[in-house]
Amino acid sequence: MEVNQWNEKSYKLPAFDYEAVKAETIKNPNWIHFGAGNIFRAFLANVNQNNLNEKSAQKGIVVAEGFDYEIIEKMNKPHDNLSLLVTLKSTGEVEKTVVASVMESLTVDPDNSSDWKRLKEIFVNPSLQIVSFTITEKGYNLKDNKGSYYPAVQADFEAGPENTQSYIGK
Image (tube, rainbow, N blue to C red):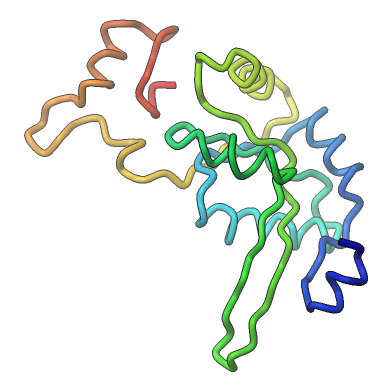
């Protein structure tokens, strides 16, 4: 679709140089977010997009998913990390925004060697300033209601830091 076709249908498009922002984000990432779900896309990614549009930010976000890899593999990557934010206003107006501030998507999967390597590169890059999370208790709880460690967490203790499998252990 051409830009004018999107505009005719009242879609708000990014007002920044996508390719330049992507290149700078890949080279010098400053924000990585864990949890690639709807809350992230509708709120954090949209805030970053507004900052990019206003030129108060120069870099996008790298998003990483440690629980549901299909979000990355079947939604983000095949669609160039773009998403559509649809907001129903109290007036009945429907606002449609193409969110393009996510510049890179990774799985938090030690078995995916390229993503795992890239995550390590990001964390040793001196440009990194923000690490944020929107994960449920499935991701951060260590113990169940009885006070016992979840099996994945217990396995992390036994396997050591190089072979973790729980979300928070990775």
